[in-house]
Image: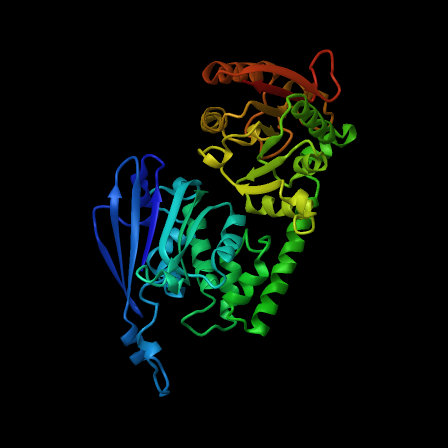
Length: 462
């Protein structure tokens, strides 16, 4: 059984730091059911792949199993040595323990960074076939390539088995990718090789933190992960429901920036201005980059002139909030087909974002460290290249008009900077010159003759 992890983020050989496995060495690990071997088929600055080879001893498993029941041929001859199942989850937890936890002593900042990654598994038992694979992984933001495996290519009339080949790719932290595989491979198989007890609930909640409570298939995941033991999965779902309610309450609580701007309902004016600009530009297919809880998407869905709306955000929690706000599970099919939510880090190239009429970044850029703006520019203006890009950001000149905002402080504690009108103009001019866009500026909110409007908008067009 093979699991191959690949990155092409340069220097790609940093994958060795993340996995705590040196690319120049072949390493072996003894497991209760066999042996795991880690090696690197390729390790260059441009591309690096690490492979986990799992050699399971089915005969030894049978002989070591407790009890004296009669053994069948299936106990000795089955798909376990060749297909990705709960054995792989255990191997990930044992062999890549630090990477699974998101720990990298040599490069701690690297473990917290979303990077382009792929995971390839040549044989995965998937009860429900391609459909269930996509239902499990696509809501997490992955590009999913899946194909059914024939029982025997020499006899095509035999058809396909429940096994599929699977490749996942996306811009994600390595710990997230390993966590998703750890939880979802046994779910796809709908089986585990070990006894499931109450301890398994805590394990599921721990590894599902930040994504499982908002996953549209959380009930299927919970039932299968806990081997359909009713008392266990009902308890787990109840805890997930409580977590969901807590997160929703936190999300609805007003933050300082919202409270500060409440008197002029500035957010409504921002979103209305953005929609007007998009309609004037004739945009039909729109990207909402850093979509958060989906407020702009909600407006765009109501307008039938927007044929395709894609919300992208690095936060699975935010995407879950957006899905709930939009009521995606209850929308009429015609509206639901117009909307997609993707997990994507805006500072890394994502080919899924290419080919759209317009992209919008509403109050997004100021949440990035200034040094990372170059990466965002390259991803949005250089790679995705929409015809229109709309950027809104606070106008720092206007901050003196907020009586409740102490001098020198930002409107939101997560802001890394707030630009004056002159600073936004200088940044926009650089983007214009580097990527071949024209740019114009529009005020959002009441205009003060001395300090301008509270929000400033830059509209780039090609």
